[in-house]
Length: 255
Ligand SMILES: NC(=O)c1ccc[n+]([C@@H]2O[C@H](COP(=O)([O-])OP(=O)(O)OC[C@H]3O[C@@H](n4cnc5c(N)ncnc54)[C@H](OP(=O)(O)O)[C@@H]3O)[C@@H](O)[C@H]2O)c1
Image (spheres, rainbow, N blue to C red):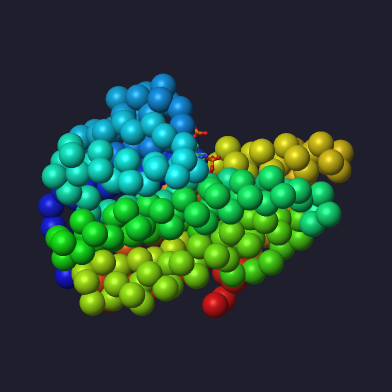
């Protein structure tokens, strides 16, 4: 069943883009928000803007102990953890032949191994409480291959597999595990992709933006708040939606 009242929520990659939209929405909904990214000053400024209770937890999510450390910090402060939103992630564009081992490993560490470690840390306290909502911010790249992002695509496909397996394993525990799979969202990460297109092709910013907007059949970039709306919906769900990768991409992927 769903839970009424304020929930204790940990969000990774919270300081800008999709993460910032998620914490703004959930804080406005009355939940308690533990905010993670690598940059303490950004988190403190964000915490000051949010209406509800906050906890600032700076850490690099690729640090092998960060999952255990952050989950424990939330429990120490608030007595439990109800919701985990694993949003920290990054994509780099490179052809297969220019993807070196270090780049490949960084993509897997951040987009796949880090969510695994956070889920592993949060499951025991959520199981003990008989309730949990775990949401991974995956990507349309979790379901469909595009050129020049092989490491990112492999990691995002992998993390959807993790979500599906965890959901199956935990289905009878009160914990749901889902992914949201956005197309191109209007965030600093997408602005960096636009910069890269301008640099590599000589096209104007408007043309580069139009190219990425055109990737969605609806013809526009997704708003970060549209991803946050879906996360809020999954948190409020009564518990029958689990193991899903919900597309937020204007209809690009239809499965
Ligand atoms: N933008 C899109 O079009 C799009 C589409 C589909 C999926 N996604 C996914 O959505 C998620 C968020 O993307 P976004 O566009 O909002 O990215 P963004 O604008 O680059 O923001 C990324 C956030 O993650 C934090 N972060 C990055 N590396 C981190 C690390 N190692 N440890 C902890 N925090 C870290 C950043 O803060 P610091 O740099 O200060 O750590 C920042 O708060 C990612 O998983 C991405 O793959 C994005």
